[in-house]
Amino acid sequence: ATLLNKDSSINSYIHLIDFNSVLVRIFGAEGMINRDIETSTYAALCIADIAYRYLGRFNNGRVEGWLDGYLPLECTDLTHDKTSLEIAKEMARLHCVFEVPEGELRDHHFGKEGDVITVGLWEQLSSWMEKAKGYSEFKTAYDTERVEKLSLSAIEREVQNFISSFATASAAPSDNGDSTASICGSAKGKKSGIVFCHNDLLAGNIMRHPETNKIQFIDFEYGGTNYAAFDIANHFNEHAGGTSVEENGQTDYSRFPNPERQKRFCVEYVMTIKRLEGMKKSGLVESEADENDDVHAEAT
Image (cartoon, rainbow, N blue to C red; front, side, top):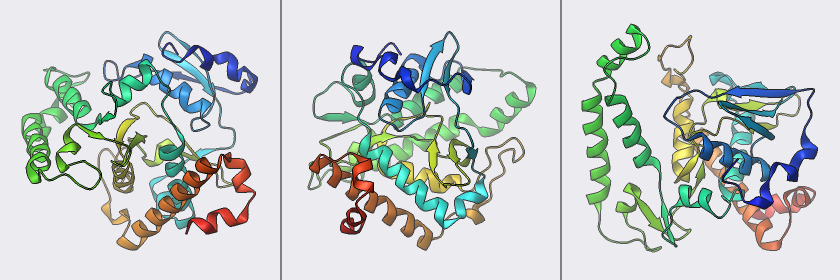
């Protein structure tokens, strides 16, 4: 993890290594993801107890701890209230607790302009679009045919029109100094709702222990600065599935959460954010606050 500060080396958590059970991850998505940045970010997430056990890296992959007893969720699991609320809590923990370490890693995710926070969403989309347009053929004839049917130029125009609509919707700044144009690039201050997001919370990237119901997010390779609301909305959209080999892109929006389920998720998310912010102000660590039954109640 070349971009971590010297104080955040593997030596600081070498005691977590259990060589009886490890996960060896081989990198894919060639050229789409900066693996130096991604691995350093993952290591920082592990130090913050958000991701699970970074043990080391080799040329085209890394070694992580094995989540013993955990299983990846299925799309149908996302519709269960108890599981959904646990996901809301863990998302709030990611958004509230994790702070990207100072230095090159923070500059990459948040930008270098002092109090102006860069949002990586639109730049990332543009980068992927340029890469996709740069290929005339893909790995298989089937993939090439699928891309041709997508009509990338039409999609690019649609995205640009979407961005422009936000940029020109209003020039009036809001109470916190932002304007709607900030969604297209950057925003000032911490009240803009910009946090470090997972950005890919589909069912398969959420692990759950069947006995404890504890939730663990995995696969942070698309993680970065974004609007907190994006992580929530994208997670709702992932209820429809379509990403597995068996589904082959076929979605089922009957599973999309109705307004009442969305409300329950968002209420749990906000309650957890308030709880964690209160803990940070009081100097408590999360385990101490969990022992106090009144803390969660006070957040409501």
